[in-house]
Amino acid sequence: MNAEKIPDIIIGRLPVYLRALQRMADNGIKTTSSQELGEHVGISAAQIRKDISQFGEFGKQGTGYSITYLLDKLREILKVDRIWDVTLVGAGDMGHALANYQGFQNRGFHIVSIFDNNKEKIGTKIGDFTIQDADKMIESIKAANVKIAMLTVPAPAAQSVAEKLIQAGVRAILNYAPISLNVPNNVKVQYIDPATHLQRMTYYL
Amino acid sequence: MNAEKIPDIIIGRLPVYLRALQRMADNGIKTTSSQELGEHVGISAAQIRKDISQFGEFGKQGTGYSITYLLDKLREILKVDRIWDVTLVGAGDMGHALANYQGFQNRGFHIVSIFDNNKEKIGTKIGDFTIQDADKMIESIKAANVKIAMLTVPAPAAQSVAEKLIQAGVRAILNYAPISLNVPNNVKVQYIDPATHLQRMTYYL
DNA sequence: TAGATTGTTAATCGATTAACAATC
DNA sequence: TAGATTGTTAATCGATTAACAATC
Image (cartoon, rainbow over all chains, first blue to last red; front, side, top):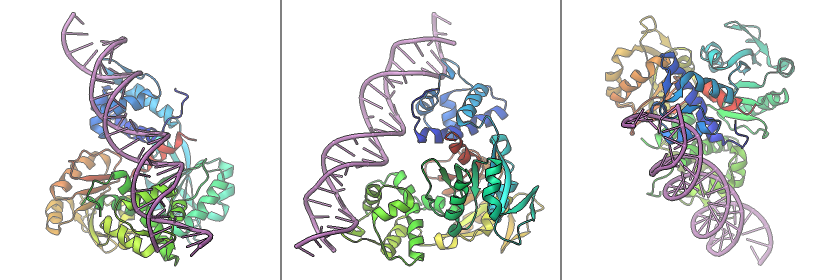
């Protein structure tokens, strides 16, 4: 792997490649080309080759890329060649949906705890999980050394909960609350807000 | 408004500005500056001024932007100064969460129908909605002239459902299925895949 | 060998930032 | 008037594309 700094925009495309390759592998395909992969993900072949070549020479002239080999490499680069523990804060509808989501396990993630501050929810179960008291969140996350959180609390609570998560050692937050979070440089945030995503499309209608 | 083509990357930031401004307005704030707004959303003041100025001169030197005026203008530009009908396809956990989501109404969207192909779900209710038979989807969407869909079906079904939606006149798809969709140029897609979003952050951990 | 496709370079294209005159 | 902040220009920075030698 290259020691130079890799632009964030490239890192952002790798999971898309990974997902498409995983799907090809599931379909029993052994080999692909930058051309073919590009058609699947809607990105130019040149860009895919350039992105991948930032990390090494993973292809072969004339034949393209071995899918399983490239999958291994991409997983290694993205550090999803392991299973990350994830905590979920906010046991509303969205929290329930994420807790029941089957797509995490084989993509590198495993939910280990769920927190809420609603006294009526605390102690009840979602699937195998017992909803825990948000007051115990910091110590519990610290003790379990969890670095990733999904945040599905109401917008007015999101910033203060995020600060507690960071205090507890969390370094990556998937934020479902419809609000921009203020976090230090060493903490990453990804935003999922359906209304915002829809508003990115209405302009073109 | 300017007649030149506005880059997609700028359009993508406007909903973020809109959301932050809406929040300021809710807090009773009347005026803001590019500097202040930038601190809220994590974008440089220069970029915010440049983005906004693509569409007109909405600020005043010395005082900044009137929040309600800028809100109106951004809503107009993004075409969310109206309510868009949205259909929801896939009545799983994620579909339920979206159906119950309270955040659409005051941001320009209104769910009008829910479809699924599971015979046991068809006819049952989610909130006020009766789940409809996916076999009736095309004609129903056509008749109602719905242009926006949220897709929460399993990955293997997503492409073929998307094609039916497009055939029915849908031009914007919010895709929750973990797969890249192949669509014509006149159709917009936004992707929400929690695992992909998480994988964009693990690289940095 | 002939054909295919990579990895990489150079050229192009586009986005961001810095700076400041204009002006409220 | 003095101070603040916009809108815009020019400079910088970064990303994408086209092209092709290398090579499987």
